[in-house]
Length: 132
Image (cartoon, rainbow, N blue to C red; front, side, top):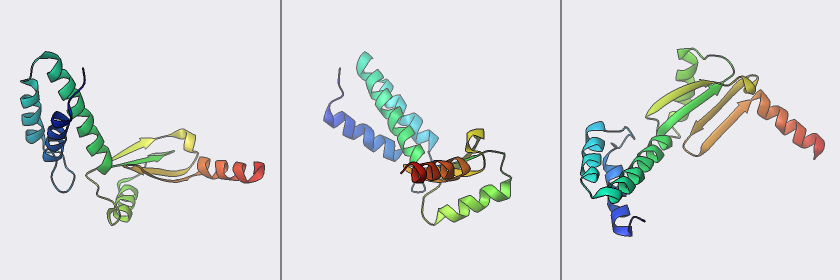
């Protein structure tokens, strides 16, 4: 079963309604929207809720700053990265991850944009130049 175009448009509006202008999820609004979708009949409710939740995740990802580093960053380092990117991107939340495969430096992701200043990326760039 597929969701029809009009329902998709309505759900997309619900997703947008669930966030404020700063990209922060408004939980009460999102809950109210999900309750409305739960009221649909059987499989339509499941499909609609699935589409709604994917939309919520997609919107959250657009404004979630993820910072990967090979070792833990202190709060000052995280704030520096945030302040550098705030002028270019809307940031609603920040996550930090440890990724030993980076060997050093950081990889930053917000939405579809990735800034990679890791040692492993520099090694890969060198490898590409050498093997040209």
